[in-house]
Length: 155
Image 1 (cartoon, helix red, strand yellow):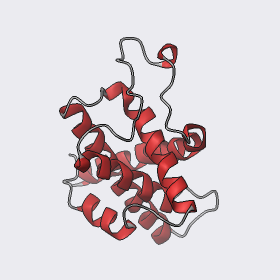
Image 2 (cartoon, rainbow, N blue to C red):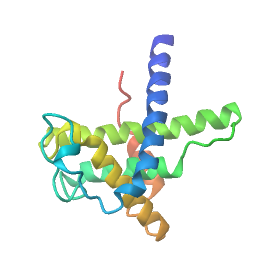
Image 3 (tube, rainbow, N blue to C red):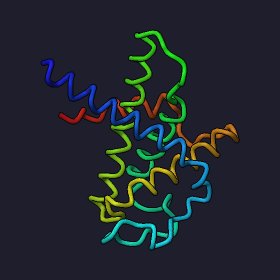
Image 4 (tube, helix red, strand yellow):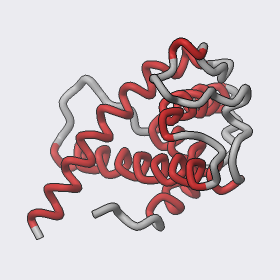
């Protein structure tokens, strides 16, 4: 059992790194414009012109939910009480799980390549930030959390 907890903790730590990177890059991707071909990893296919319009509605909603969960549960520079820290990491883990689900769905649908994941995630982060600032998020945080909790935890 401790082995599984260790994996969850490792996933949570990886998530923290991903979450903080996603929030830092989001403003730069405000127009959801794909990077130039010269900025893509070697062998990566070109990105679609509208990163928010690719894939099924299920995949797009999952990615939107991931970005919303991260936005509402940012890393804090202040130390948190252990229980608050655990709750934050749990919420961020849900963001990671549903984001991974969304990217995997896009890849499965052949709507995107795995190497495009960061650019796509950044585009969703920028859109969610824009929607939240306008007071009009497309999906409710509670619905996103429920949806993320329904996805099986990777082992």
